[in-house]
Length: 115
Length: 114
Image (cartoon, rainbow over all chains, first blue to last red; front, side, top):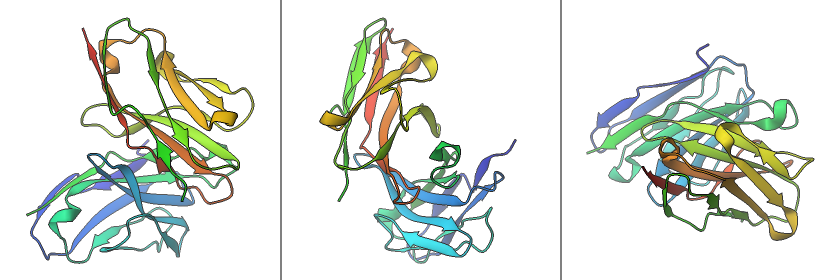
């Protein structure tokens, strides 16, 4: 029962480098999300996807790119990492609203440090 | 824009004390409401949720929450906390018919002293 897995779990990168955080879910949930968690801000939505090939911006999308070529994968790419993108990143998934209660399930998080 | 407010940023209690964490949201339509818990170094886990029906919902580990529509509130309660309840608690709202995304409050850190 893998559920939702994120990789890498911990990453240190340099400013300006491209970084991709991977997210994979085994439930065939149609919705997937990327949140970042920062002290004092709670969790803020970066991007989300309602289905394969459908993505939309969240609250803080700048500097990030996502894709959803397959239902089960939702990678998040930092095109040119900045120190302000040092954060904990959580991937999440859920069934469509109205089915199964719309509960969102979270991965274990990816700790990213940009130096 | 819709928002969720958690009024207590850090709460410190002794074991066996009662807990109430406030959560208010700003949206006048139909919402789904959630409380998540995050233990130190771990991911978010669902404590309880409200979609419809009885406004008093019970969750895991003895937690409950009451939805008061007129006050736009969904406060979390527990009659007697334990040291193991030390964690960060997040209230979240999903706006009905606006996709599955959650809007989170800033979180409340709960420290329970043994």
